[in-house]
Amino acid sequence: MTIVQHLVGPALLPTPLEIPSLSVLTYNVLLPNSVDGWWNYKMYHPSCSDKYCSWEYRQQLLKERIAAVDADVVCLQEVSPLSFDDDFAFMTEELGYTGKEIFRRGRFRPATFWKRCELAAPAVHKDRTLLTAFRRDEQTWYVLNCHLQAGAEARRRVRQIQEGTKAVITLAKKLKEVEPEKNAKVIVCGDFNGGQECAAIRYLEDGVVDESFVEDGAPVVSSRKELPFQPPLRDVFDGKDAPPTLVVSELISLLVKHGSAYEQPQFTEDVLQRLERIFDRYATHIVEANERVMNVQDVERWLIAINGQVGRGSEFREAARQMGWTESAEGKDDASEGPTRITLPVDGYLTLEGFRHVYENELKGGKFWGIAYDLAVLGEPLPDAGVFQSRYDRIYSSTAVQPTAVMHFRSDVPCPNEHEPSDHLPVAAAFVVANR
Image 1 (cartoon, rainbow, N blue to C red):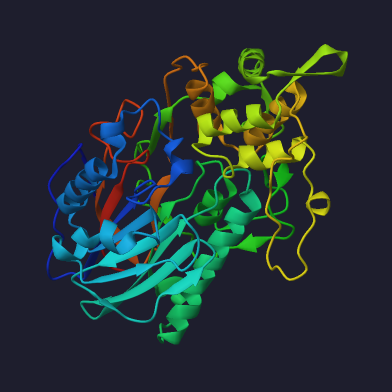
Image 2: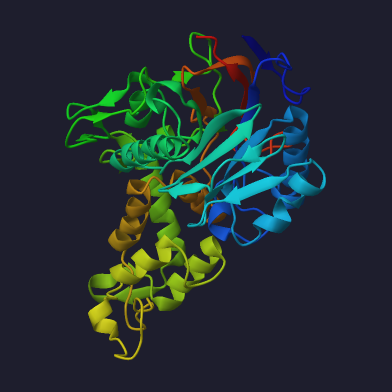
């Protein structure tokens, strides 16, 4: 097998034409796309310049990267349903992709494009997995595009990948595959939101996860879960030195004092002091015992600074609760449908303890980038702690196919940047039908 590595390079090495083959690229392209996704700008501002983070600039880099690889099947993650057709029109109009499928639900959707092959059956949509089956060279190939849940959601990630892989077997049986558990030509790829040690990865590579497996301080399954393929799937980098695919600024060591990133995290003393200084700058109201607090006007100024407007973001929702808002207190029109609209109580106020609680809630939710962004725009930027690297993006295959070439990309500085349009780096591989 050939390993190809470079920033922007030629197409994947060709496979012998007489052997049925398929090439696949997986790429988390990073929201927001062209439509405003204010919550995601916290992922890379203010460290990345506006020019390099603009969709126009990033879109051109994405197009160049995808064109350079020229894979038969392109699996994207984090596309926006609001602007998908316009954002990725270049895939069909310029790069020759003849088919596409976008996941049906959510803001962060997977999408799959293809050319030089035909869809063999309607796509299957499960929880954050998108399954497509293709006919090429009289062979059926199954491609599972995954974007597993991020954060302290190990149980859900296992459930998602189990559901997706079981869907492959179900579809293969509908298409009259003989013993699909052994013979189906399967490629599983995407952003797994976890490294080598996480349960979802172990499920794919070991073929089983049981009740003894603990992730983020808790068991991930209540009963033994077995992969429907035997033997288990193989990483295309099996036995090779696989590069990181997530390259971003290091934040956790600056923010978290105690516990893991997701298991009972606590702020460092430095961050607590920064939050107190910010609170002191915004708190203009005095209550009993000479305590300084943020009244509703102070809270609104703070929310506009971090989120651009009042009424959006988890900081707004938690601040409203800390100020005394409850659904029962707000009241609800009997004729209305849906959740009650959250508002800041006019007579409420936010204490220092409540302000800290807002950000502790963000920390528990794994919103490290959002916290760093807020600190920076509020005048308390964190120091540079170097780069965090991990391997979240992977390609796996069943033993019915054999990888012949793998292409990966490298960056030594946090992404996105002048040369990289996303915080993730792409991975691509070419496969042939295994000679068994």
